[in-house]
Length: 120
Image (cartoon, rainbow, N blue to C red):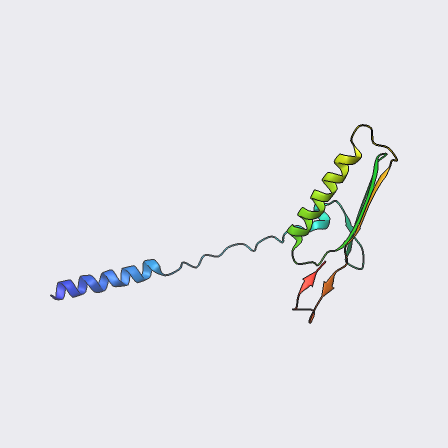
């Protein structure tokens, strides 16, 4: 009986040790790239990203806040809009050129600076 109790105790300790989460040091995650970097824009002193692209067939201007928390969603939306616009501007038979796309994102916040809801 003592052997069985000793074996179960040892097994229980083994299981507990095996189930315990391992603490492994991991490098700090790199910050997510901002929409401004992805859209080839520049950030001014007011923390506003300004994107300007101009060709003979179109002109594109974006302004958006760089501190919006959901940068991937913002980047995806603006990239999709830009790509569709550039596609239409480059179609054969386009007239009344250059086409112009201006998009101005204004940041809104409820609550304190460190909380609340954010939107663009």
